[in-house]
Every structure is written in structure tokens, then in C-alpha cells.
Image (cartoon, rainbow, N blue to C red; front, side):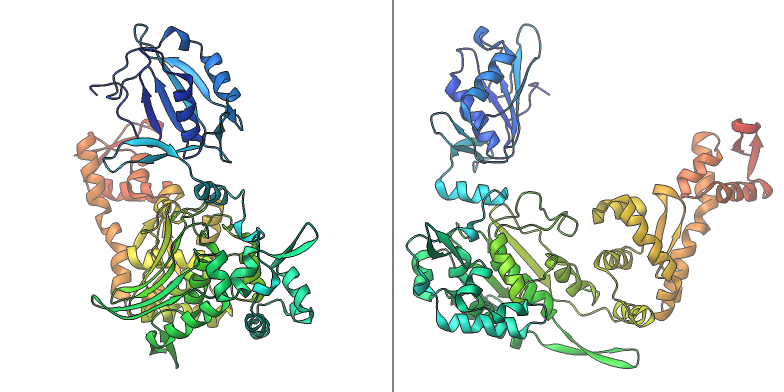
Amino acid sequence: MAHGYGKETLTVEFKSDLKRLPDDDLLDVAVAFANTEGGTLYLGVEDDGTPTGLHKAHRDSIGLSAMIANRTVPPISVRSQIIGAADAPVMQVDVPKSRSVVSTRSGKVLRRRIKTDGTPENVPMYPYEIATRLSDLGRLDLSAQPVPDSTRDDFDPVERDRLRRMIGSYQSSDRNLLELSDEELEKSLQLTTSVDGKTMPTLTGLLILGKEESLRRFVPTHEAAFQVLAGTEITVNETYHGPLLRTIEHINDMFMPWNPSTELAVGLFSVMVPEFDHRAFREALVNAFGHRDYSLLGRVRVQLDDAGLVISNPGGFVEGISIHNLLTAEPHGRNPWLMDALKRIGLAERTGRGIDRIYEGSLHYGRPLPDYTASNERHVSLFLQRSAPDVSFVQMLAEEHERTGNDIPVNSLLILNMLKNERRCSYESMSRALDMSGQRLNALLGRLTESGLIEGSGHGAHRTYTLGSKVYRQSGKTIEYVRQADIDRVRYPELIMKLAAEQGGITKNDVMRLLHLDSNQAYYQLAKLVKNGKLQLRGTGRNVRYVTR
């Protein structure tokens, strides 16, 4: 590398110290790092990564850390150390990501961002961004905040009737709410709160019961759209500014005619399979409203086109959630009060595992998994691909349900889906792809193996799995099963001989690692090659090796 420190990124900053960098500039970098992803400042390095050394005033690492802590609110606890050559020392300052919003003592609040040319910069953090940051970190629930200047007169009686009707119609709702008076109902669902002895609507209350004109006034960021595209032509384009329950009902009604069902024969029965699972669609729609960032302009968008269905909302994933751990992270959201109300009404999954429902909507029919890869720090986007159901996969799940009387849990469905697509998977690849603990993955694989839905070979972390023989037999794909089960075993001698030739010999442990076999299986393969005259035994005890003749 021409320059020892590479280049600047979102989490790396260089600052020259030849003329003594002002303390205020140091603080700006520390605050911006803390309010973004954390990072490392290299003091005494030029913009191109060339180390040029520290000013004598900055050669006290403890003093530098203390200065940053004393002049930031809340104090940033950095780690500083001098690194590099003696003739051009560099101060490495590691800044942790803050769990709140940090400012300088003078009130300066900054964040990091990447410019269009790919280089980083420190920019002011504006009030709405502070609210978003605290919300993402789980330190502020905007939906719980009282809305200044609003009153219960901003609630729509028609929406209150709709609320009661919904509570009465959903099986998972809290029916006890129906016994409460209007004021008690609103308080129980946290639609109102008391401020200085005065009852005032919360953001949750306005979103659920607010009149449309009140929502336009107090929550101008609240907007939704339903669109249907045929090619590049927009055939349906509806925009909504009204309360949530009404909007969710209207979008659901608009969606239904565009979601046809096809008849699918499963054993002795036939079932109607929609193009997009109804429960998964409702859960995704409710999640988009429940988890969106109401401090940002933008809309919840539902779009149908030739490729599939997109549901997106303003506001990225909250802290601790990413596309890699959606199914395994502890459920938590941006608007806890709002989501709690939607759960008690019966619209959202009461367990907080609505994402499971969305995945099950695809997995139950053997369709491609929900795709969140278009999401970023500004919005979450879910794509559900148009795809015909996998009849064999549906048949397998139906027969297993009939045998046990229980539905297969979502994590087991993910394993089966992975094996369906990949044919053969190692334990290691499943552990990485499914983001599960070893204990949980072992338990799931054990149950699936006992049920005959999957089969394993090898041992330990190198153990591999395929769908079970009964699955292939039920789907009329016995040939595919035999190929998957036997192709490796047919190649065992070839692979052993190739490695023995390259290494000038081979041991039992080599074979165990190469073919993912246990000790007895490896010995059996080597013994056959010795018997057939292809390998020769050399040495005794632990020094046993097999060499080519």
C-alpha cells in the first residue's frame, strides 16, 4: 500500500496535525462518529493517507481522551493511543457509536455521511434527524408523544365505530376493550394521555382515530399509496391521507381483485392458492404503517407489477435489526405504542413475530423467500415475487401436517426450503445462511431427521443434509434422490486417490476431512482401496499412511 492508512470512509477520518489541529475540529469528528456508526480518527495523517506526525501539543493520549469527554454531552469515552513510526507518530482515536444523540458543549450536533464522490463529510444533524436517530436507537417512541394543540375533537366518531367493529371481528383482538367507554377505550389503547391534567391525543391516537383534516394539519408526513402497473403504464394510482384503520381496509379491498387464486390438487383434496398469501399481505401492510418513521416525509407504498408485489415505508430498520437477522433478532420496533394498539385491535401478530407470518406466506407454497435487499437506512422495502406454487413442496407439508396435526415452524420451513433449492447443504452453510445458534439448529435438524423429511451424512460441522427419501418418493423424484444420495459415494475412491497422489500419501483423518465421514466410514473406504490394490499401507499406530502403488 502506497500510504499506510488507506483512504477515508464513513468510519475512518484523517486529520493533519502539522499546524496543530484546533480542538473544536477534533470534537466535530468525535461527535459525528458517535452520532453515526462510530469510527476511528487518525490524527497526524494527511487526506491521502500519508502519516506526517503529531504536533507536540497532541502527544498526550490520556489528555486528549479527557478533553473529548469533558467537552461533549453526554461525554464520549474514546480510546486514544500513539502508533506509527517514531519520526511520524500518529494518534489513533477510536470513537464508539453512541446509544443517544451527542453534542459538543457548545451545542453542535453533527453526523457522518458519504458525498456523491464517495468521500465522507461531517454535516449538521437537524431536529427531525435527531428524532429519527433516537427512534432508531429505541430511545424515543414518537407514537407515544402527545400532539400539541390537538384535542379529542380531532377524533372522528366514524373511526371510533370502525375501531370497535374491528376489535369485534378479529379473533386475536382484546375483546375486553369492547366493554369500555369511549374515553376508557382511548386511554387503554394509549390513544390519549394526560398532560398537566388535560387529556390530549397521542400520535397513535391521531393516526388511528383522527379526522383527515386533523391528520393533514398535525401529521403531514402521513401518506399512503396503492399502485398497479402493467408494464410501464400505471393502471391504478390511489393516494390516502386518512386514518390508519380506514386506509388499511381500503388498500386491502383494492388489493383483493388483483390477487387471484388458482386451484391446487393436494392428495385427495383441492385448495385455492392465492398469488400472494392473504395473511402475509395484511401483516406486511400493517408492519409498514406500524414501523414507518412518522418524522420523515414519504409514503407507505403498495405496488403491484408484472414482477410481483412491493410494500415499502419511510424509515430504515431500527438499531439491531438487519436483513440478515430479521427472523432471529428479538422483536422490537420504532413505534411501540402504535404497534401495541394494532396488536390489541387484532390487526398485527400479538407475539410480535409478524415477520414469521410474512415468511410463512411464501414458504408454505414453496415460493421464493420475501426479499428485503432493496432496503436501506432511509426506507424498508419488501418484495414478494410472482411465482407458481411448488406442488411437491405443498404436498410434503400437507402430509406432514396430517401425520402430526401440527404446522411446521418457520425455522424448519427455512431449512426444508434451503434443501429444496440447493439439493445438498452442509451444517456450516445452513448455520451461516439461517443465522441460528448451534443449539437451535441442531435441535431443528434432529427433529426433521427423525420425521424423515431430511437425511444427514458425515459428522460434526462437516455434516451434510438432503431432503429425505420419502420426500423424493412422494414427489415422484426417486431418481433425483438416488443421485443426491449416491453421487458422492461413487466419487469417494476417485477423490481419495487424487489427494493421495498430490500429497504423496493420505491418512484416515485426511479422508474424514475430505469426505465429511466418521472414523469407521473413512477406514472402510481406505480398506477397500487397499484390498483392490490401489493403495498400500505404510507404518503402524498413529503413523499409518496410505500411499499409491
